[in-house]
Length: 282
Ligand SMILES: Cc1ncc(C[n+]2csc(CCOP(=O)(O)OP(=O)(O)O)c2C)c(N)n1
Image 1 (cartoon, rainbow, N blue to C red):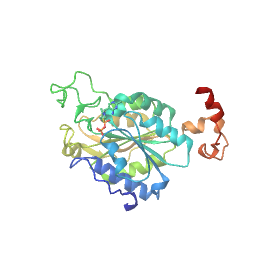
Image 2: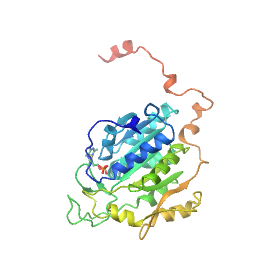
Image 3: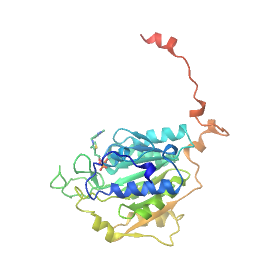
């Protein structure tokens, strides 16, 4: 675990669920025997994105809402490397929602971890598309008028191949989920419900602790059952691997020009002298 640690001082608030997700991730990587130079960790902008200072590994910290395209691009260039992308609910279901749609339908062979704290944390607690409608937030004391986006129903409508849900208070479960997600053939969508004691006063750590339960004896190939479990959070919240389908080829496997290739794209890069060409532009 220490191999992954950075000396950079942490800026997360006390009690932030990011600590739990960070610990679970380290544990998952170590248990899969992946060392920091054997993984690419891609971060969106947000509180969760500050994990890029807190965890070693190849790291890329991109623009708000844009983590998925560059994570997918990196993976397609080097299929040997496990690639994980991290994003907040603000980034993923507002600015970056288009990328999320295409990542699911493309079945990119990457893991996406949604740090779902129900608000825009880094910019001090504005409502996101996943904040309950009417919930008072910093910039909307009367609540926002828009309906809450039914995120899980939306994800299932895109026919995903892997959907899991964890919560920041259950590190052991989160690391098991992450290990399975890393091993998944295609796009793994992992919803991590994350306590945010500073700005989220509705789904608090205590609230999550009371409602979240690990599903047992669940058939992860049953799409309809998984969807129903994922969507209905009115009384209890099911956590664990909700759905997995390994039969669908991922994006790379569907690329005709890559069929039968033993090398990765980064290994095939040729260095060319373009100085003569560039003279046309001066
Ligand atoms: C395109 C763009 N829009 C807005 C911002 C300002 N901004 C930076 S972080 C942030 C909030 C992040 O919230 P979320 O994505 O939910 O992540 P969290 O901080 O909650 O982990 C915003 C709005 C930005 N940097 N870029």
